[in-house]
Length: 311
Picture 1: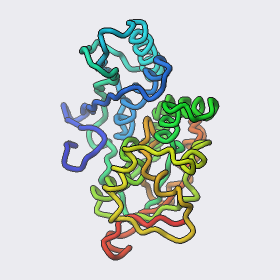
Picture 2 (picture 1 turned 30 degrees about the horizontal axis):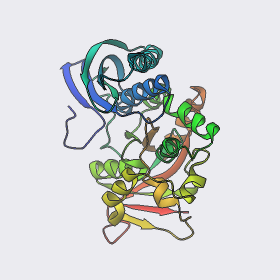
Picture 3 (picture 1 turned 60 degrees about the horizontal axis):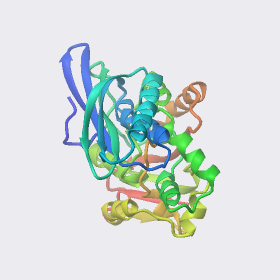
Picture 4 (picture 1 turned 180 degrees about the horizontal axis):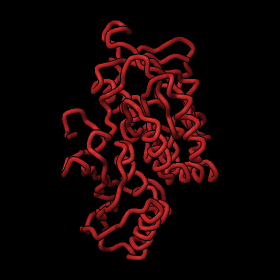
């Protein structure tokens, strides 16, 4: 029902009229030093792709790369962190596979379920929709600063808490209200994932930089030149499609393409339904629930532009 053609968050395969599988896989090297926190973040990140499709993750398999000469208790703590986060999500980790690798890596292959026809994809955004974001951005810059040991402990600790948060409650609220499209904002940065939604939907968008929630410390670190290689690659993929408004800070571009880990959901829905979604997100305990832009007609921005960024 959903394959690779639109670059969606996960695949959806119908088994019966009442049941479809949602499948995804995600794994990456450590982005924080604490092995337990790394395990929690990796699992929250992997499950997010199922949540973005409006599905419920139910079972998963560990994917591990680990150097044979590192202490095995480090790996044990990674897996413990992952297991705890999976348990919080109600997901069974039923096994997995481990290989010798020069660089540690961890993640999951996840299977979820959804009723056919009720899946949420990235391809349904419509002009007149508004865009709602459910987590602040800046994790790439902050974790890069963490690896370079140039970040305050409280800034990094706050980012770890945000990355470890499941998108389950946000997804439940989204499904309850009914929305037109959704992606989770992760490795391609906010602009990259918005571009994917717009390409799949045949639409364009305007976003307000000042409305976008940023993790504490993000702006300061960006001003100090703490950036990521992934962010530079993300910018190459979208720069010709962007229309930059006046009055934007010098750091705006770097922050908007910053690769996120376990980022929030970016949801497109009719403007008249947005207050209800925000109320549902608040009731569900989702800390961030802000309108950051709107969907407009394809071609309305002129000159082949797909996204207009205003101050």
